[in-house]
Length: 332
Image (cartoon, rainbow, N blue to C red; front, side, top):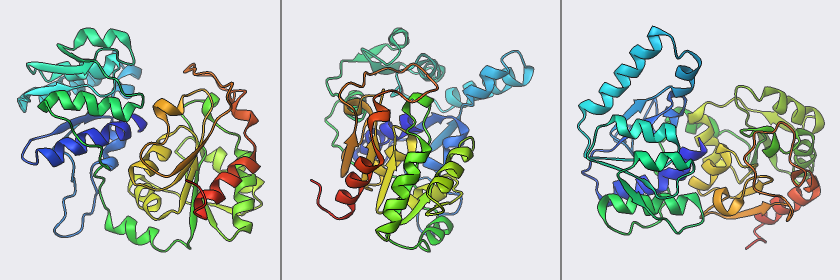
């Protein structure tokens, strides 16, 4: 989710600069809600950014690589990319897997970074871009510039509107703060009990506090509810609901995770709680924010299960203070 959201500003800039271009995107199926609304309002596009989605369930394939069904799905996915006769493929993720999918389109140009996230990926590109930006959003814009040989402006992404989800979000008591405690791995995950303490403090200051959690994160949400003594409420959200609620929230509090990047994409203020990942590269960008990170935290993408030591030095009081500064408009 985060990789897609970091790429959206670049593709939105391309769409706005070249509205007649046909743009497709290869994604894991669970992220379709970032592009397409099931129910769009009359006169609006259900898919405002791209013309075609290609679903690549790579994680499912990896678990069943010897299955004939898997190979049949791979064959169909490759055909769907080839048949549209794309002129150029661009890899904004910088992984070997995404670079392979870019090659499946059989275009004359496959563009990627000179120094991608996974170095082996560069050998699958036939046009490499040397990027100078620090943040991944800046780097994606630089790669996208190579497609049309122009300097694209930083712009907020185009994300879909689902009228039903928007109507449900409009019923939330305001002002509302959204907590998103999950993360890709344990080292990035601030303890749920500390989110609960923050929720109590914000509820005492008359803010509605709700919790977003992914399918495998229900235990985190329940721990926040328990430690907040009921001050925080769980609100089940699909992708359309998460987008709608994030649009209406006064603030998002999260670690380095997809919902934090979604908030920035929607220009919603964020408090980012960072540990082993570098906020200069992956943190809030182009939105009002406060980032908390211990100066001795070291960039480390090892998938450890326990919270990183520096992350544990961040107190609920520090997070609450940062949240209130943003909510009350006293932060830069």
